Image (cartoon, rainbow, N blue to C red; front, side, top):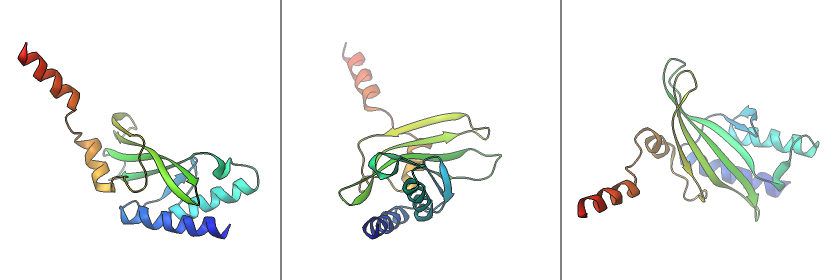
Length: 145
């Protein structure tokens, strides 16, 4: 358990360096700062109430919140514990209206903690998405014909 808690502290530190320092939900429950939220999840796992670290678990947080009357940005991550460390495998970044309606979603697949964008970059990705390469290629083909 000591090894898991040490890995958790390192995971928390890496996410804080990238600006992910708000409250989290682990497995859609356990609201708190990241380390405490995952710690509560682990405790319930030991009691048999949660799946634990044998499978992927979810982490969610707000990346940007300016009050109930304004749009917000949230992140939903799939995390795992493998080879003695925590990592992120996928992340959905959601741009939401004040009433919770989805304005835009960006899905990041096959990522890791090292390639996870920092909080500001993630917000920019969903608010001002880059023009898709496929769209550009189609325009070029149409001009050539």
